[in-house]
Image (cartoon, rainbow, N blue to C red; front, side, top):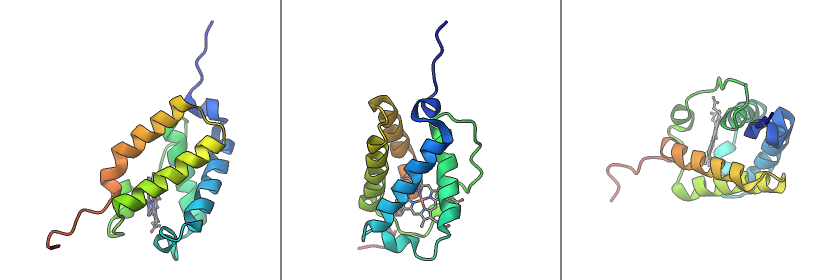
Amino acid sequence: MTTSLSYYEQVGGAPAVRTVVDGFYVRVLDDADLRPYFAGVDMPRLKRHMVVLLCSVLGGPEPYEGRDLAEAHRGMGITPEHYAKVGEHLLSVLREAGVGDEILQHVVLTLNKVESSIVAEPAETAD
Ligand code: HEM
């Protein structure tokens, strides 16, 4: 009998995802371009939401109960460049944790899918 492990199981489940998310926010807060976005944010709560979201993206059982991504990031003025940097930090940490290419590809596709919900609309009156 062949059993196929979910991506979630392949990476090592919730404990591994928690380690990745901790490393991810160390990198994000270390990045002078990104740090200002997180001023005054309840980081333990943000990490919990990110862990659960990443677990569910990888096929884990935890239901994501945070806010809709568009709602959570509305009004922050996140630029495409800053979005790309955050994505690179996430992929670097996953790579350093030994996560394989197939799973990295899945994360890249997911990041591409949610980008338009997170990046700010260009201001209508900008000229
Ligand atoms: C790359 C994809 C991203 C994902 C998957 C993601 C995911 C999340 C999640 C799950 C939350 C918590 C939602 C909640 O509180 O219910 C959140 C909040 C937040 N995100 Fe993101 N995020 C992403 C990109 C970014 C980027 C690019 C920035 C800024 C450069 C950013 C800044 C923030 C901040 C500051 C909060 C806290 C909002 C608050 O609690 O008021 N995120 N994000």
